[in-house]
Image (cartoon, rainbow, N blue to C red; front, side, top):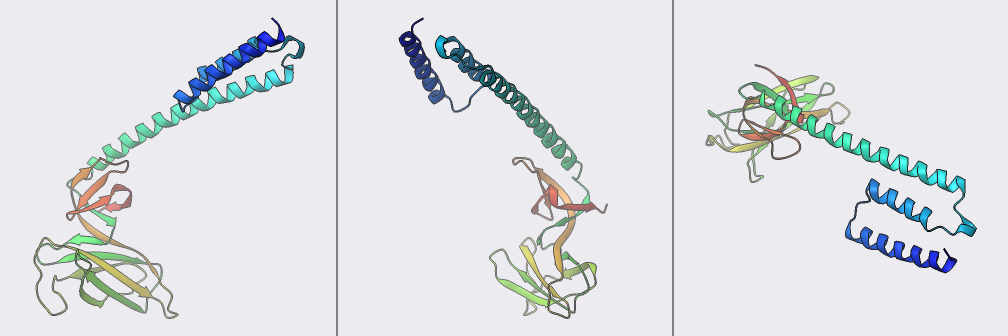
Length: 221
């Protein structure tokens, strides 16, 4: 084969490869190998690919194939893990759990929240807001290091009893004697009545509010 013929063949191969690449954004193992074989078939006999370059290309091919295999295994593993998480989440239904969240539904005239402090607090301020963001209650709470509980009687700041069924959010500000925040997180405790698996992380319905399964701290009953 003459040099000009090799050049033409190489050009044709390049054009075909470019078209193939354009039609697909993903380079497969077969594509990689085809390009390597085409290079060997159309190389200039007077200037052949060096042994070192050939070994490097073969090594790249082996690494590429290995990476594809790893990616496939990881995808399979992720799918299995997701199914396992969903299965475990179903087991929560009917049980009372404690979860990291700040929203609960007013039921039977009250709502109970919890909050965790990294150390004792000298000042703990609590506010409750409705679903529109309006503050309906303000008060104080205990400042013990660790877990604390606050039960709201469902009455606003004027003493009016609010109707059951509304969703309310707690906001806690806890500071030590130096004015530093010692709040870790807020929690709610309630019975799991449902599960939503439409997203990658299943959500549980606790006290009428959606809570990520990853935020469950424990099962109390």
